[in-house]
Amino acid sequence: MHALAFELAATDLGVVSESIPNWLAATIVVLVAWYGSRLVTEASRPQVLERMQRRSVAEVLLRAVRAAVLVLATFAVLGIYGVELSDLVLSATILSAVIGVTLAPVASDIVGGFFILANRPYEVGDMIELVDREESGYVVDVTLRYTKIRTLENTFLVVPNSTIRSRDVVNLSADDERTRVSIPFLVTYEGDLEQARALLEDAAAGIDGVVEGGPGIAMGGTKYPAQPRAFIESFADHGVRLQLNFWVERPYLPRMMRSKIHEEVWDRLEDADVEIAYPHTHLVFDETSGTARVAVDRSRGDARPETVPQDGGGEDDGGTTVAG
Image (cartoon, rainbow, N blue to C red; front, side):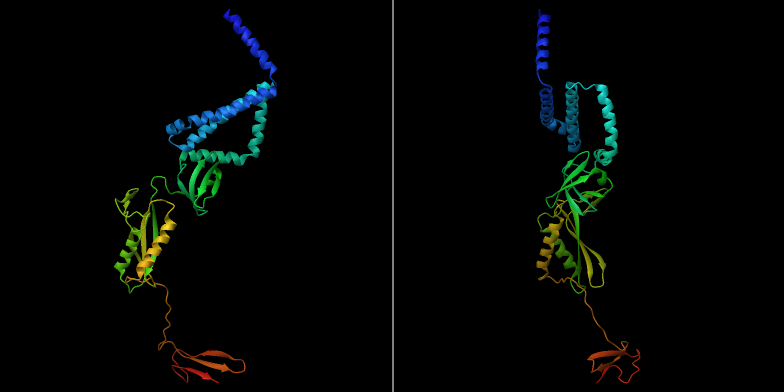
């Protein structure tokens, strides 16, 4: 009884499937695969992210699962239209050879993507700097083909993975977002050097966003002081060269902090025995300078200097003669 009912149900299903046009069946398969894979990946994304602990790898895995579902749907559509598997394999082989020749750059990007996912130079959410472009930004997406960066100018930068492998990339926030910044200053020899160093340190410590103090910041086996410190770099031609080192809380703050510290130092200079040095030129004339005789040609209105020996061997030692 049950066997007969099953056979009747299967016969009815076959009749119904034969009555559906191929294009409609193919459309249903594609839509179910497209939206079904999307719903499944979105529902499973939190669990996958929690298990993988790396957002870039989790996103690539979810995309791969969805792509696999779409490939299976493509096979199902081809089966609806009566395409043999052997013909499909042959066509896929020929197509793969053509794609391998014409899309070699894409394959190179994909290989670079695997290297990035394996070596983990950066992760989604990290702030990185492309040294050759002198441009910084946050990584918002890492795929097998490209890395997408939102720059500090609020623009998107899409970098192929095949080129980013050969670039110098600085990860500014991998382990610790605090970044050390240095500002050079040149003060005069006549000023109070210790007061100058204290002025720079106090000016930096009072800026919001600058690490004021606390335990030393460990980098490798070395611990750097967290509070701002001003060091004597060298005794230069026009003054004493100082360098102010300080740490900022976020890697996107250095330019803003430099500006604020310069403003604060400028305001404090008025009441301090400190002066910013700048080049001065002194012309010194003594007994070794020699003399020069100048003749003026009134018809042309120009002066023609004539150099005399350093020992002053002329009629007018130590002076200047103007012949009219």
